[in-house]
Length: 293
Length: 238
Image (cartoon, rainbow over all chains, first blue to last red; front, side, top):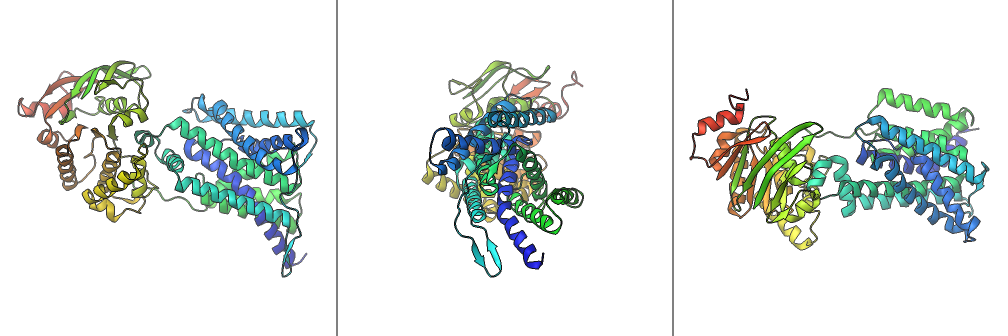
């Protein structure tokens, strides 16, 4: 393995890292409005991708329908999680939603294992054209497709947050919930919608993970949950730009470690990255500026 | 205009309001005085629909507000400038004001209201694209007032608008309160600064330990006694 291979590994990692960015954004969005971690988020994203398979596998729909179906299903699961794990749970207790969402994570995984008999399911690639060659480097067509879809999803999210009335309400509730209510924003409606939006994003991430790995397996949900949390910590809880950059960083680092050492050691270094950040930059990459009050 | 009758609001077992009754006349400046912990802020949040009272009634222009959500109260024409201002710190000044107009859909009018407010609060215009968290305390208070005005309220409630501000800024705020009132907005404000409050108020209520213990108009009564009790509570209480 030479220098070129390491650069190639980083490129592949950056392309795939956009899925981690999306998962990180989802954790961060929900944390922003609820000030709680939704531990079931990554599992729900993958469960959405599994639901998408129902279209081609059971209903005989064309293969491409798996993508929109995955996204819609994940949005619906997001709202279901809001209702079951947050809406009627006493939010004053920090442990209550941690337990309810870990329970939901286990439940979702169990449903997936049960309905697929634990067998991995094939998942179509988003695009299977010829790879693009740039000098001595190669951009894999399927990863390029994943990258473009994830970047488009981020662009849509940012436009939603910063250009629409709903986005204004989401940010207002995240920054100052009492004042948001005094402006006429309805807390529970905004919270519920935030879960749906985070769910839709997770659906994109779940579908793109399936598309780049080529299959979905119940074994994916654990590592994706952990990496999503690492991305969230590195990016800084509540920071969307942080989550985007941290997702790319974790994707690139993971692939580089894999090239430098091997696939079995890879995650050890990613975990170490988490500790490095917790010790040296606990507020994340861009610790957000605080107001005077 | 606003009629509060026998309102009881509790946090768990502790009753912060023990049957509060008062009324605000249309077009007036009405002040609510009282020492810390008297329940003034609880009353403000109860009227605004953030807290739900255990019993009692809050009527505004004939409509019952108890049981209505906060957005309905805003829609009826009541805006609250909350204690500690509570601006949205990471949003720009303009975005904070846009949030204040959240329930309105008349975009042309919103834009012209924005310009009018920028004329009234020039400091905010200068800092229109700055995050609200970087403003000084006085500027944040102006922003909180401007944000509340963006909903075009008939009744503007203000909770301790002078708290923690320099004397010059406090005078500026009371000057604006007078101006708004002359423009036809009814003002109901909680104030610790009893000296200033009694200068502008048409009517005042004194609240102590969850109850209204005194009501009157400035000049009608011995002000020293009211001011003393506003700061310290009555002799019986202490």
